[in-house]
Image 1: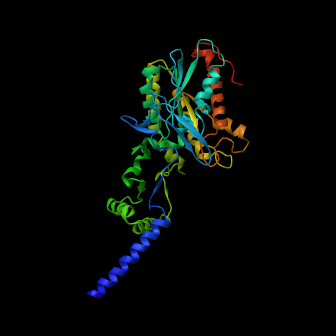
Image 2: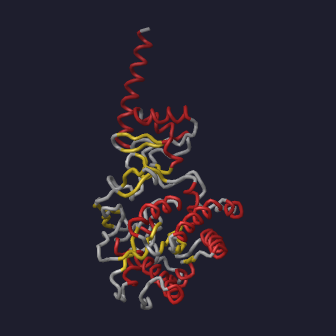
Image 3: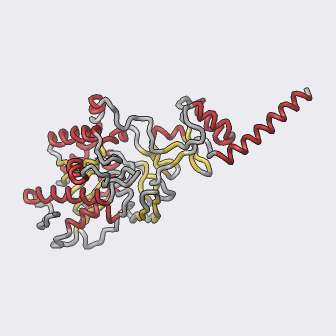
Length: 373
């Protein structure tokens, strides 16, 4: 009996020493590497949209590719407050490509469009409000319009539509302890005092054991993570989903766009009832080699076809991007796929050209606009 106790004591001492070594050499097993957009204090819980920007927030997002200021006004927008003398002509809604993730607020396409519209200042200064929120689905973006329409009464709404992220309708980002996390991931997470840990197991019993080990026994946690097929010491990334972002079976994927179309129709019907116009701005990111993926083009083509059939104005940015880029990755932020400030300028110019083309017919600007180019 004494020998058994002696050997067990040795094993326990070795385990403790090994645990201390692992804690000193490796990160917490399953530690979630949050997207840089998830900075503390930026988000608040929202009763309809799940999360929104915190009014009055002031901070910075810093990565290897950029360092930007993030200032949120009292209405929860990354934009300047509307002055009493100003008229809101356009409300821009969408995700991080609309809000201008990676560039300063004045460099994002809504503000660049505002500058172009106000080249002719007759009739007072006209605002283009930036109502974008990073990670939003089309449904969440529609709710932004519904919330701000009765406050600002915009003449037009421009929806920045990232077509390859159609899956956000079924797996939206949701509020989790101050962060935006995909809904499908929430049950696999545990918030600690030092961060968030993640379990790759879908089985509840395995997941609960895995999370317990990662909280209290790093050696066991790393081994459990390893058994799940994740490398020892590797951090999970919060922006990787267990759903295909760009499936190879396009025909099957296109059938899932019906929900996307339904949301666009709902938004357009609300706008028509209030004598407002909707423009769909199709978004696609540039690859590191300067090209644009065929999947994004196919998604965009499907949405263009839908919009033409339903009489909704749509702007496809890819052709102009491809022409101007000439194969160079100038419209992305280095290793980050978001638009560069040059890309935002191009987008604003494309939209302005579309407004000029239609202004002679519907006079929505109420005053003459000057050409953007």
